[in-house]
Image (cartoon, rainbow, N blue to C red; front, side):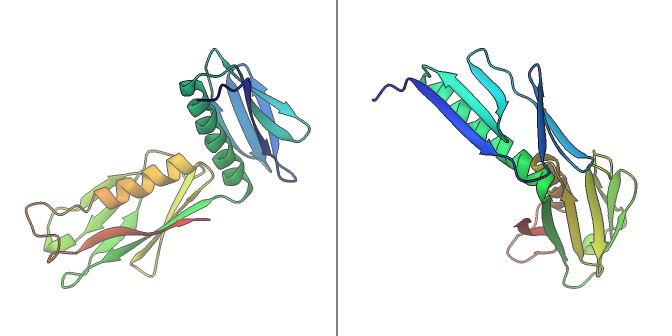
Length: 183
């Protein structure tokens, strides 16, 4: 395998997006909206140069080369999230028993799934300023935010609260499902 003398990933920042590095923490911000994350490794460095964020490694090994690519993907997601944001769309599907969905402060409640008397609850662990969850048309759920991991985990929590157990999934298809992921 060919030895590389260095690895450099440059992530350009769109207009209005600012980046700052303090120790091991990288913060990307735009118009009061910011995402921060810790990047720590003894051989990898992050720096800001001429409107771009740079991930650098000198004489990388295989694992460091892989980690540099991972950091590149994380920083790209941070920049995209602050600039345009992420949006997941979920849809509630039911055949006989109409379910009702309510969003409260830190939880989403699903009533009458399969006619169950006890409501199902999905935890929403982040504040509405980090991840916004809203219900439209009684069956469409929209999850928005600037941090891709928080938005994705919130959508997964909502989808997971309606898992059907001890039933054939091909027949009993009621639940809440992720329909689209994207911007």
